[in-house]
Length: 232
Image 1 (cartoon, rainbow, N blue to C red):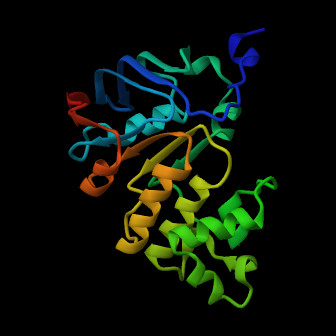
Image 2 (tube, rainbow, N blue to C red):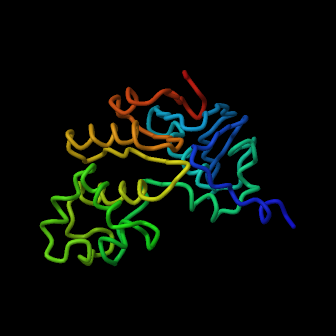
């Protein structure tokens, strides 16, 4: 059998070790965004990736989802090339918040849990309290059974962002990939979320951000400039 068929990503309580080894990547049309990028992340470490728009912050997150295979160099998870793992095993243990995501037509609960029946209503309620969604839920007659419109029509940006963030945080993940997680959120809940990430999550966390408050809460900051590390 091929390695990728034989290697599910092992479930552990600890975060994943990550290594980018001389990675270069360009999107279709020759738009090169990563240039010989090398860095390592220890299991359970919280990393902020910062830099100007177009510096490659979001691309690092997208490569770690396993979505792109056509890159030079190597991306390692627990010392094994990412391409050797099945995509499903990576996704099942990775919480993902990317700008391209959206609300789909379905109940609020389905939008939060993505149909994962292992997630209890107690877990949902707890994270709703941390992120500030509780007020919205309690204002809906149907609560978590409230039907949402596609693309989050009729919802405020704050509520949409909170739903997408909770979607990423729910579940037993070894890796969290978060793109501007506090965007559009009230400062009081931003503080609670940062404290929650710091104290209650065992996962390795990579956050693409321009938010200095997030950077301060992380153990390490990678500064990108045109797809290369300017400082670390």
